[in-house]
Amino acid sequence: NNPIAENLSERVTLFSENQISGSADTNNYLIDEDIDGAIDYQIENPNFSYVQFRSNLVLRWEYIPGSEIFLVWSQGVVGTGDPSETLGRNLDRQILGQKKDNTILLKATYRFIL
Image (cartoon, rainbow, N blue to C red; front, side):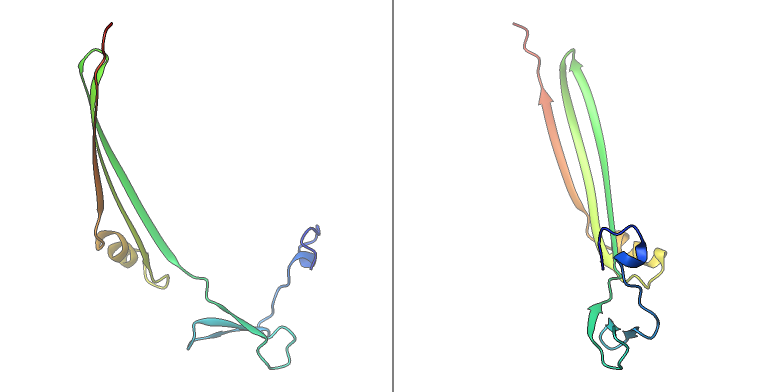
């Protein structure tokens, strides 16, 4: 294969149904590149399900001109799941059913007049 060729068929090899099959036991794809009946190599199934949710809330109060107090609350959750599940079930298990990471920050500024 030529990775800089203009024609797609010269850059990649497209396998036929006789060259690639799935193994339910190992969750791998079995490749028979030369179609001789012997498996030449296998690759792991690349399917995955990854969900990330982040939210922020910022409160700002200017108690005197030029001086402020900020209160920031951040919440986040990350989950991985089964790509064969439905969207609703994955969201329930990966987002709603997970422990949330919470962060609270307080920042105060004061303007000194010299």
